[in-house]
Length: 256
Ligand code: CIR
Image 1 (spheres, protein in one colour):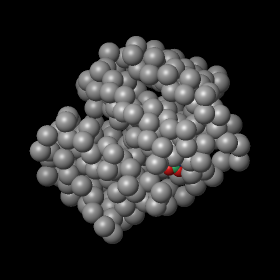
Image 2 (cartoon, protein in one colour):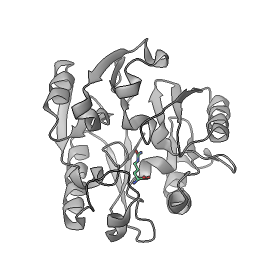
Image 3 (tube, helix red, strand yellow):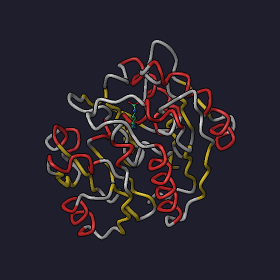
């Protein structure tokens, strides 16, 4: 059974209001987003992890979503190469912090590969990599080759409707997988215990398991009841301002 020791987050920048989005929910309110980020950190503080909080960076509106910039495994970290142009150079501002934790076990995705780690889901020593508008075939193949150097495995899954793989999926350990929409019936996950998240609560399919706790967005009672029924300690956080720019609870941290 894994245990996470570390979490990396980044304070949202004022420019967050200009984050990339496909949602039609209006612009985030910065003060509210900041309060919600603090609430997120308080939730993590209940999960027995050491939390690193990186400073806000105005140059990158989406830099609060640190998850996309690196894949942190137990043996190595892989700096990604985000497929969104405005996010590509976010890797420059995460690198030092990642190197502090992983020393010389830091790898990189190179051009023409693109990867955003929101497209990668860890299940034990296996990593599912979603091909999306942000993660391409070359990037996924490079990722699998790097993982294999460290005794880890990876495989590619396709996705059609959502931004990132983990927009519609969350692995909660103990064989339990939250899934919504296109992922409920995907062959690749049929060996797992699929917990179906109904369409009207699809945003809540993006949750995080942190040492026996599940942090989930507030306001999704069906999902909450299903997760609680599995025996997890559920911690709800309001992420309404992040939802407006296609972000959820997983995107806002790196956990390892
Ligand atoms: C983006 O479009 O890149 C951001 N507005 C949202 C990123 C969400 N990250 C994630 O799902 N891992």
